Image (tube, rainbow, N blue to C red; front, side, top):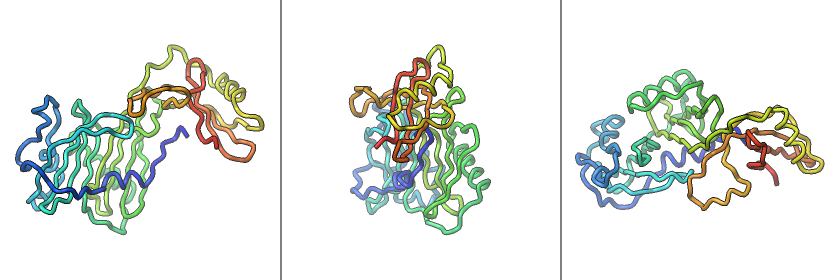
Amino acid sequence: MCKSRWTLALLVGLVAACGAPSTAIAPSRAPMANGAGLNIQSITAIAAGILSPMELRSLVARPFTLVRGESGEQRVRQVLVGADGVEALRVESALDGSLRLIAKSGVALESAALSESAAIARSLRQLLRLGLEMPGGGPEVRSTAGRTLVMWTREVRGVPVPGDGTRVVLNGSGELVGLAIEESPLATPPARLARSDAALRAATALAPSGAIVVGTPGLAWVLPTEGSGEPVGQRVPRRLAWCVGGVLRDGAAFELQLDAGNLALLGWDGAP
């Protein structure tokens, strides 16, 4: 649906380790990304700010690789590994140098959870230390599996971008486990927005027989799923949409996503 869906997959992605042997350069040297014409901050500079001198000892950096994020964004991945070849730190950056992900391995699990205010304060401190932009608005705080997640949903023109935003993962003592920043491309919004009551009428007309449209339409930036025809992996811009919820005859919930300007169907979420 139009609301963000945070799952344990975030934790898995942030702390997953890679055990392949190192073919790396020493951490005191910059990665070859700059030599390839990419203005990417060195993982060793980032590591110096978030790892202790003891943790930095014996770490080596692998040559950078190019990967794609879940949204199709091309990224530069840098990895530090220990003498045993086990990944200790992973960093991913967009090609313009914007930091997208930090994942530390081996951070201790702790049964105690931070209070909400302490988790937010620690997360902001970590973002400030890394020189990252402070997210606006109040975050959602969630504790699970010995980790505390602090999540800010991205908003553009006051409208949420589901799935986008800043997520910081901490352990029970406030130590950084990882962070992720997602910023999807956005299409130009329509020059004139359709009224919410018009969106409600359009959704009612599009709903299947026996379904009931309920609730108040809300705006969100959504990824079109109806006839987009885009190749897999391409960065498809999100579009501004009216999201209208409803219930099918069998009681299952659904949501229609309509172009915020012309009310064309962009997506159908939750249908069996």
